[in-house]
Length: 455
Ligand code: BES
Ligand code: MN
Ligand code: MN
Image (cartoon, rainbow, N blue to C red):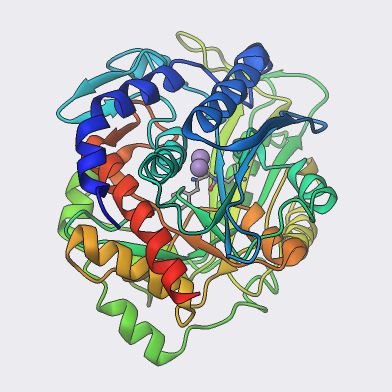
């Protein structure tokens, strides 16, 4: 491909400014206050696709937020890449911990700071710009379709219906996604696995009202104490999850696979120091890379109950709650694990309380083969830009629609992400390196070329 780096160099300021405009729209899908902004972001993405040269751009209505669609069919006999991304973002809370307002992007130390800078507006926008580059330089080598959704951060609940209904329109040969991270700029990687997810909310109820903690304390079950004991019992002293049958369907990695994983260029000292922790924590017998990539996990995401205002209030609360997520690996399923959790959690509750387990959205895990031409094409594109062969790495995060793309559309996904674990996605001060953004655009452009050459 000609002119790739020239085009990026000549247009990079405009690319960054356009991304900044998109980042100013607070498209928080979880919070109904931002309903209008989410739709505005969809329209902004549609316009950017149109301006880049896409045909038939539209906002496709769903029961939730619209899906942005656009395409360029240069020759129906040529292969088609379907680009997936999301324009919605996580809530910016806690606002007080941001150094600059989350929807007022700033550039500091060659990084763009804003909610969505990396996840996923910045990464999704690289695809719009790589497409623009290929259109303007007259070298788009294959067909391309864009499917950019607005509900990824709330579980993509309406997307399965959408892709089922639009199966014909979405016909393609491969799905290309930038919504994951790399090990580092020096050690590029390709994501070859995503975790599944089972997410539940539990509520423990004791007495029918809040009580005086002296008058009743020690005599009546305290829902917070009991919830903590129940949660603590979900793991044993080796950090194995104790839910009966939890590991039953886990596909154990072979010795050879684990040997390869051990060679992953991962710096544990650096990892700990960047997080400000003295030691890592997890299942005995597994490395950090393994714990994150191939082992299922269980974490409390939030816990509340009782008095948390200023000063001390002596109260024995009536209720306590927690949000619990379990990240799943092949061949666990969301439905199976959710049912096992519910049964177990209800069974360990003492008679002094009642427990209610309510499942939220979930998703299935995904693993990508590395012996397919599309993986090789991605690897070749990365070598061109980063000067190093990428290593395959399984991620700890989830993108539930990817497993459904395979089930419904019969398509594999290439997870060509350019974020870094330190980009603080979902956290205050989320950012995305300008170098990552520009190298991403370049790599994506080369992917089109190496992919089309192999087809
Ligand atoms: N882009 C992330 C997923 C991700 C991040 C995968 C980093 C691999 C590496 C995505 O936007 C996300 O946050 N997904 C949610 C799942 C969803 C059901 C809310 C997650 O993983 O918590
Ligand atoms: Mn994302
Ligand atoms: Mn996310």
